[in-house]
Length: 440
Image (cartoon, rainbow, N blue to C red; front, side, top):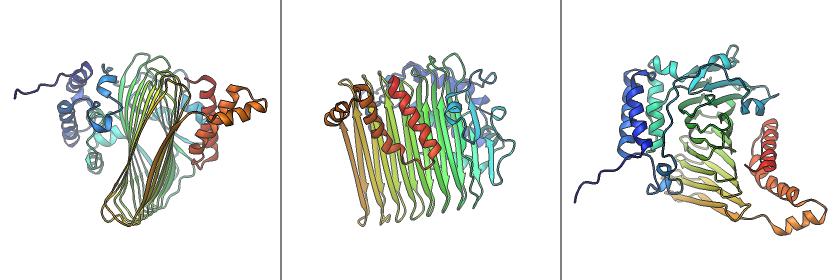
């Protein structure tokens, strides 16, 4: 049989050539360069993921990303206008960490007087110092994933946040990843957050760019939650409607650790949110929720793997999608229970609400169980607004649009209610209200 020579797309060719040009300018020495070279070699071999790759069956990235934007090489100054994340958090006390056009910006961040026990540095500085522990962490336990390989090859900067053991930080820490350039660029950022044993933190990570600019974002966030530590996370994706956003989250839970995470997808033409949660210690708990608000021709994909590798883990996943116009949502969720992870209690639910005949929802929940003393379940629903409830509202004088908004808010609100911080919960509901008013 003749050898099959794959044809590279313009995007794959451009990314390979860009790495050759930028390799020597990216931060980090020998160990990091080896990591980058290995990652780009894997990408060059496999290319962008496509529908014949099971994890990308519903999101054919090779087809959806035909061109690759030039890689951002740093910002030229502070943006003239405040960002959407600033508006979202206005009036809420927080520690602001800004990653602008792929580079950490201390000048825009509030790092001059951090609380005792909280430490912040830039990823680029840590790589330049040759931090061996950090380099090992970057190369350990990563799934076989082409977009993550690209992130590893090109990672330019980000923030490294650590909280000392036993320290509870009362003020939320917000990592704001933002594009500011008026021309389309690509950024590859990576951040790490590590909580020592018994520590506590509220983390907000956001992703945005200027309206009308088709930026491409490939961002990765790794979180390590030590024994008995607690992390509350709220993530907001509010990119321009022309943008492409791919984000990867990796969480490792120690013994008795706790994670509460909520992610709101409210922007980007193409969005892929990958979450990989590993139970490394016994009796850890996680509540992972999210909501996607889609209209027009937008495409949003949430792919989640919850890996129970220790005893007595408890996981809850709840994801909601509201889909209008000709938009499409994808949910792929898998709970894995490894041998020996007895007493695992895992539940996963995906629910989609279709507001138009052209809307589409794909859901693929899965269980892989290799232990016998566990409780696991999953489910997925898809439907339209309840006509009886609409009639009930309208019979009491509520106009059609207002009645629909009430029902949609109630639908999304079930996921938003998992956010413990009342101020953040109220802001998320406000974003939902604004989307309902415009449906974009």
